[in-house]
Image (cartoon, rainbow, N blue to C red; front, side):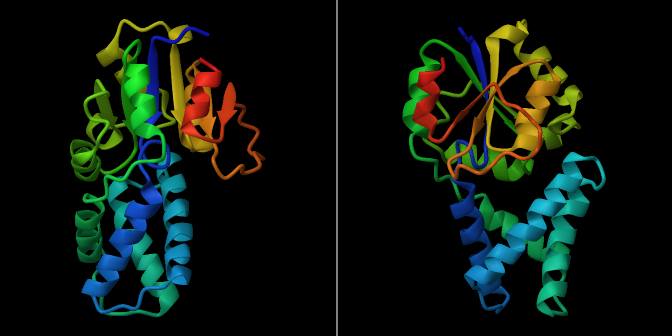
Length: 227
């Protein structure tokens, strides 16, 4: 298939979010005098993932997500007397510093940008995403960045993609590819909108969701096997 436009998810697809997240959580714990461990990091990720799924489903707002994830974490750890909203603000400050990229991201974006328009589509926090992007090595290869917080709708909502197509248009759906690591956000959003999708699945996780991407890759460089 000849694609003219590729819509890349940010975290976990181009950006190494795991590293940025761990650094931010460990730094925030240190600031508040809380002991950090991989077990606590895993617990946070489990709680945070659940909150993001609630947000994608429209059950909670972005503000509720940010505060409730830490309120839930502190409750699970039996930690009292820490304001979750204030902790979240400090956490986001550390997270905004994490511009590390997934292996191959620079090379893939550089090569693709020579013949295609590239955009980032993200449900992340606007101030964090814009800060990380501005510090990254891929900023010169990405023509657009669409942050759900600024748009008012989030993936997989079709209105999010309406906005993207309106700003980047005219776009023909057959020429647009969505690339992302989230089946419920990136891939479902693309499928619902009638777009081809590429599921980035480096951990080779079994797909039990019923959501069917057009193709699947285990490394970013494998995208060249399909386009």
